[in-house]
Amino acid sequence: MSDENLTFQPSRADKHRAAELRWRGAAPGMPPAMADEFMAAVKTGKTAHMLTSGKNEYGPPIVTPDRFKIHCKLHPEWAKEVRAISDKNGRSLKGARVRNLTHCKYGHPLSGDNRYRAPGRNERKCITCLKRRYEAPVPATADEIRRVTVALNEGKTIAEICWGKVDGRRVKKSILSFRKLKLHRELNPEYDRFVVSALADHNSKGQIRRYRKATIKKAAAAKTARKGWVHHKMSDEKATRVLSGLRDGLTLRRLPMAELHQAYPTRRRPGS
Ligand SMILES: [Zn+2]
View 1 (cartoon, rainbow, N blue to C red):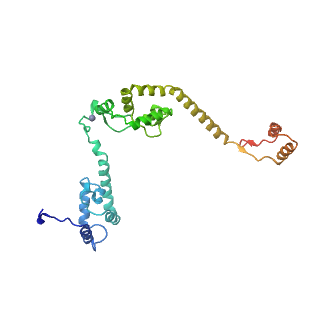
View 2 (tube, protein in one colour):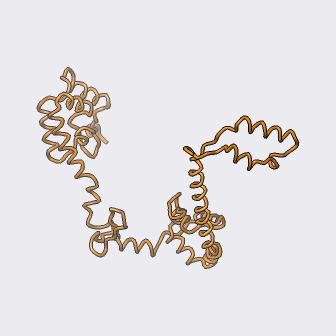
View 3 (cartoon, rainbow, N blue to C red):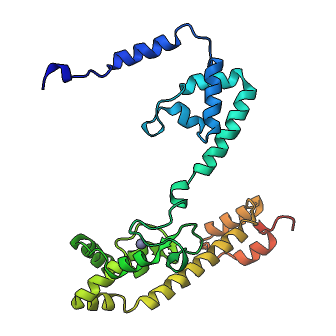
C-alpha cells in the first residue's frame, strides 16, 4: 500500500478539541438558529432523544443532552412544545417495527387464517411456523433428558417439567418444551414406558396436594380468627391456688383447671 492512499481519521483528542472549540465562550443553552433547527427536526418525526443521544442509529446529534436540558430550563415555552411533539413521535414509534410487519420472517402472512393471537396476548403469531416447530422440534439434549428423569423420579408433574407450573401457577423455569419431550418419547418407546409408569399415580398426588392446600387454608383462617382473642394475665389469686395445688403434689393436669377457667377466664373476646 502506498503512502498517499493512507487517510487519517481524527483522533480522540482532535474530536474533543473540536467539541471544546465549538462551544468555547458560548452562552448557556442553544443559539436561536440551532433551536430552530431542533424544532424543525422534531416536527419531521424525530424525538428529542434521537437528536441528543449521538447513538449510531440516530446519526450525529444536534446538541448534547446537558445543553438541551439547560436550554429547556431557560426557554420553558419552547421546551413544552418540543416535549409535546417529541413524546407524540415516541409513542407512534414504539413497537412500530413489529406492528408494521405483514409477514413472518419465513414469508408467511401475519393475517387472515394464518394469524394466531394467544388469549390475553397482544401479539401475532404465524400458524404455519407454529405447526412446523411443533411437528419438527429441536431434539432434546442428553442433559435435558437426565434432568427430566430426575424430576420424574422426584414425583414432579409434566406441567412442572414442561411449563414450570405447580397448581396452575408458574413457579420456575421449564426443563424442556412439551413438544421436545413428546418427540423423545415417540423415538424412545422404553423412555415413554418409564414416563408413563412415573406418572401412574399422579392423579392421587394432585388430590392430596389440593386437600393439603385446603387444610392449610383452614388453619390459617382459624389463626386469623384467634387473633380476635385477648390474653389476660393470670390473676394473683388463681396463681396462688395453682402454686399451692402443685405444692400439695398435684400435677397441672390434675388441677381443677376447668373450674378455675370458669371462675377466672384467662381469655376473653374483646368487649365481652
Ligand atoms: Zn411463518
